[in-house]
Image (cartoon, rainbow, N blue to C red; front, side, top):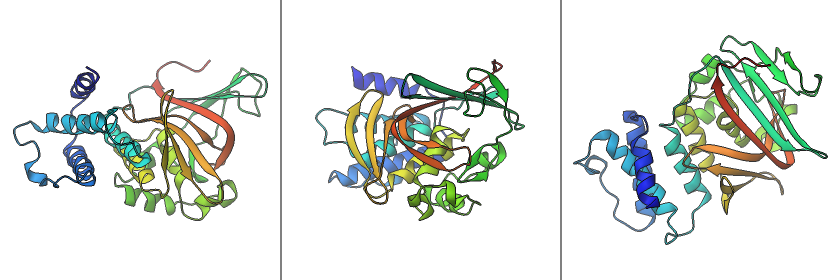
Length: 284
């Protein structure tokens, strides 16, 4: 029954692009090859199905085979590739404001920060360190990635190929003093996570970011937890990024890394939950 529900939920999602279909087919073939099966020819995969149905079934096969109790243990790479496949056909939504909510456990109570940003760059925030607690204030801080200011048009113009995406990120102006050492050395793990968790990134770019993360050496799956699968990504020394990924929703439920005001990243001793949405509700 769970398997049928997974297939049904995928079939009612918006029709994917031809590129999404091709990428989903490729990932399915990779999994079949790693399990010792003959690699099918791309042109003959599911010939009797329509293109949209073929893509949905390809993703559903990954879901049901990877997460079935009888299957082999799920790798961290598989979790991220499943999230990449899901992200391709999950619409971002519409609205006037890009609303970000960050939540974490402080020393005495739960802490919450919020921001609202319009497409023309106007921004409001609540509970930033420099503001009166609880009040919504106009905030000129732009979106940043590795210290570089980045707007909606630039985000929408990022490559949808994982290798090209990393190359573009590496070429951005950056603030090295705000970045963790691993990213200064070229790992680029935290900016990829930022593209997935906080910024209004198009679906195809989010998919590419998940796929690029899947290629990170040493990524491991620590097992299922509330909200998804807990992944460990080793960085320099003994530092590890911990994050909980819901692969079907293509969402990072929480992580121990946070985007800073300078556009860099900071590690936390506890999990930080980040939720985003487009909304027409005014900040108040």
